[in-house]
Length: 232
Image 1 (tube, rainbow, N blue to C red):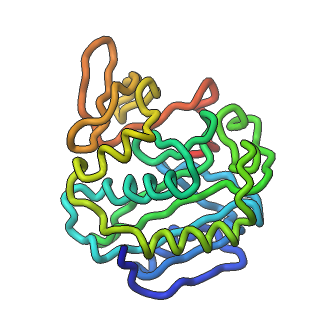
Image 2: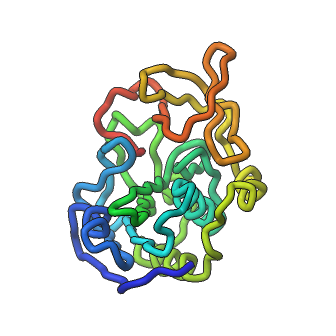
């Protein structure tokens, strides 16, 4: 996968995604992100030295018809690298708990992909402790957050170009998919469960027997979904 620009490390930064959206080039990373955010502008909980945050601009994919496939492609690559499961569209889970999230945003036509990986032993706030976890908390010892980044950056550069169609990644995704049954809230407030993923990579959302295809939905993780802090 082609990534233009430098690799930039920050000893500490509020958000790698923010700087990547400003520069629109390169890979930006830290093991001490103080104010990271995920989908729907939720705060991403992280602990210094135990979490990895990476954001990268990919101007090579300006105009991609289905830009959400970029994030799903990265999500799938991370799942294979660290032996995780995937849930549409951006969650990576281990033992049913979220350990990594991927976020794709479009700035001036340029896709910017960010992801956070909970690596070391962590103590999560009570609001998310029932659903958020880390690799180490789940018994997956993969080294330090810095060592994980070294694996991740090699993975990115060796990754094949992002496919233009869901069909090109569907088989691999479905082999790791735990989306069916996951509960989602639509932007109009309706709540339903996932039936699966469509032939174009959209969510097949179902409420009361009526299925819809959606490209944006809020994953609900248990009883504390109203909390402002979430691992989305």
